[in-house]
Image (tube, rainbow, N blue to C red; front, side):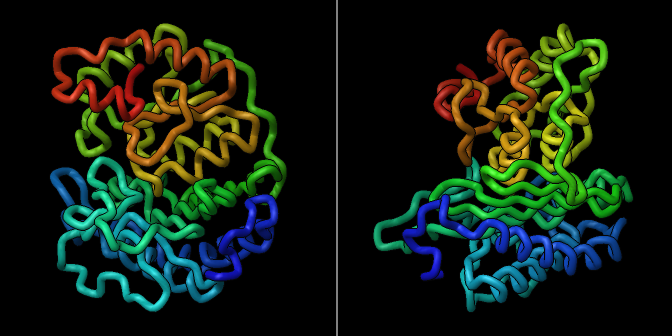
Length: 325
């Protein structure tokens, strides 16, 4: 949208953009709640699927966000769709990200070919149902994620948890809100109380880190923080970390739609979010650690103490992506 082109981040009207994101989520929430327990509709890869609700919620969010702002939308189910384009009307087709991932996706992303249109400067990022496997069986740990990226920075984010009755929002430089109220400060590290959320231990579809490495990491972190939790939703892990429910989280998704909203939320409440090497996270990196500053530092120390192990076939690639130091 030309109104945003070249505009410095500090001049972006994040208040209005957050209001637009929340309005879109308000409407999509009805579709989300009406189809809890939906069966798999599209098998994207072994162990990964989308329900009709995933597709419907993403289409609805795309339509609303584009109508309100004229900006393109990048999402889990249909990649980047620009204003005027129609996202995947035939839900029986394979997920387009499997074979046609665009330049914002994780390890599957393809390089932009010469002459391809450049990625948009300002765009919405949508995960219609984060925690689809939970959603499909009625587990309430599932959420809608919407964020706005401008010139490489996430500027606004919404994490909506319809089945938990909770919403977490953030604007860059303006702090964190939980259900519309300023969030409490992140509690200090306390090994006897602090809970740490941990990403998928067995699923290979989340990034490229081997299972044995994740299991060793889990055991190593447990030396300092024995109260580990696995929710099955990256979005909720990061949102609960931002809100101080969890002291920290370790996740393995390399995808922008999983992480953008939560990273901003964590940072806006004084937390730290990096890759496993301690560098700023970027799309394609299979490793994200976030939390209260002391918790984050402790988690990072434990993570970097874990050898990648012989199971890693692409250890150098993992190092290059920030998976290990």
